[in-house]
Image (tube, rainbow, N blue to C red; front, top):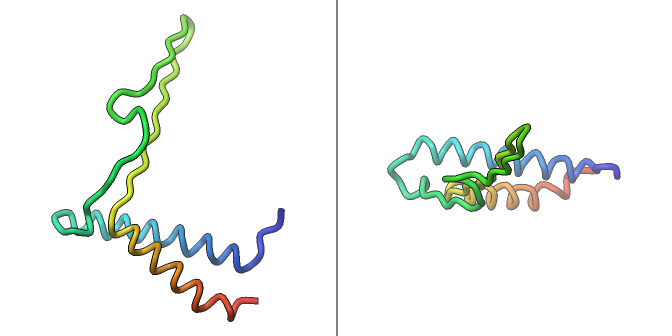
Length: 87
């Protein structure tokens, strides 16, 4: 599966929006942009599989803040405006 130039630009925009949104959320720790929702399992107590020889701990947490959502919406808007200029 070959990734086109438009797909590559879209992925880069989304990843950079997530990083920038996380940074903005961290810097505005008392504002409305920093409100975060956590989804996943094993956050407080991870799932443990204790075998005699070794122990496996599994956990997954997905944190989303309002700043990240706004940055992703902005990245999608920028992509739709400028995608017609990408070959």
